[in-house]
Length: 273
Ligand SMILES: [Zn+2]
Image 1: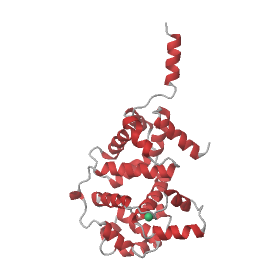
Image 2: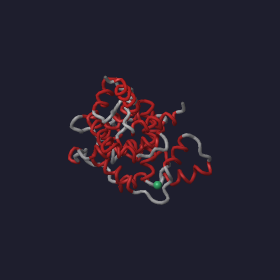
Image 3: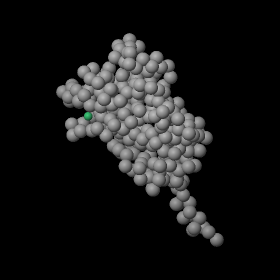
Image 4: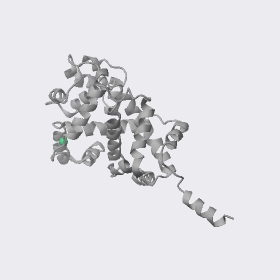
């Protein structure tokens, strides 16, 4: 079965509240959600797993209303919506007084990125979001020399992020606001997310790709979506699977039922004394 068919089947099952589908969903996406929660919302009172659990409950509320509103085209578009939902949910408990001083504003980030090639913008944006050099190089598939070249503009104003060895946002509250600002600043010229997925998959020819990349290099809204895609592809590949007990604990807080429950109860009714 193709990955796309599998994705749609799992999602359909989740919306119907089937336990097996949710088990697959949680096994696939819990590792990614925990990496994102750990990095962007480090101060959630019950930790990254607690944030994911609370966000899942909100996702499942009122017959999975929020889940149904996500982009269903393919897995990556869906994951971009899931990521935004998780980070927005987490932002309600972020305290600006816990941010390291000197957090970048949207205006400061726009000024910093202005006129740079797309790769350098990706490097700066992901670095400011809190990635270590090691993760940044693996995520963008670049050499340390390329990363260092891209980071030159961060000195001296953002020296604190350049030295980081752990993946953790230094200014979660301010960065969350910046991401929300970027998400809200789309224009009619912004291409659909599918166009970016196609570029990243190498399915776009030069004539189509060139104007898209030019737009990307001038639009914070699209740079946020583009880097989110790269981040999600990386964690989908690299995040370590979680133990079965942890997945079962998450399942226990969702309104799910065994897929064949109805069949069983019918049999029970038929053979009841
Ligand atoms: Zn745009």
